[in-house]
Amino acid sequence: MVYIYTDGSAKGNPGNGGYGIVMRFNKVVKEFSQGYRLTTNNRMELLAIIVALEKMKTNQYPIHIYSDSKYVIDSITKKWVFDWDKKKYKGKKNSDLWKRYLKLHRKFDLSFHWIKGHDGHKENERCDKLAVLAAEDVRNHLIDDFFESLASSKSS
Image (cartoon, rainbow, N blue to C red; front, side, top):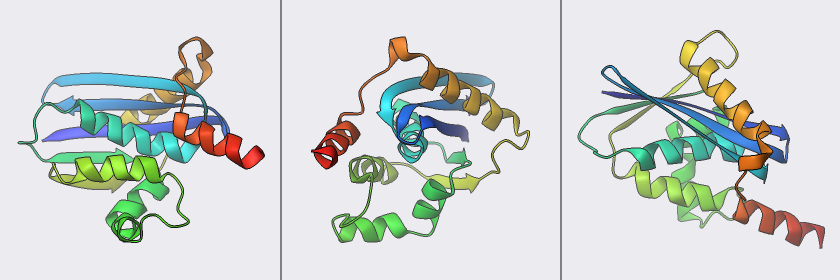
């Protein structure tokens, strides 16, 4: 089994954001993080899961994903995202990321687990630290093009 732990962060919402990922397979542990100059917490929570799945080199093992995001976990486990997809995401936020996620969802045997954030869970605490550090490291921020283009069109 593969275990994936994720977290997202945004300083201001929207604001500088980042995600953190810890992936565990047997005794191999890998960590990933990335910051963005303008985004939201929910986008970073979802993007962390997407990036983790994109990093997978095989789909032959079941994957357990742990996140403290009720937004992401409920949207998937309660199957809301599949209805949003059928309705072309009308009125829904983060459609770009949900579409990207659904392409991956179909490739893997996934199980989702909600964990309470900031509750001493070792991997969740590590993911939170990675996400916060990535959000704060403005030298290495990427641009969340989809979000920024929406934000600029709303302010016009």
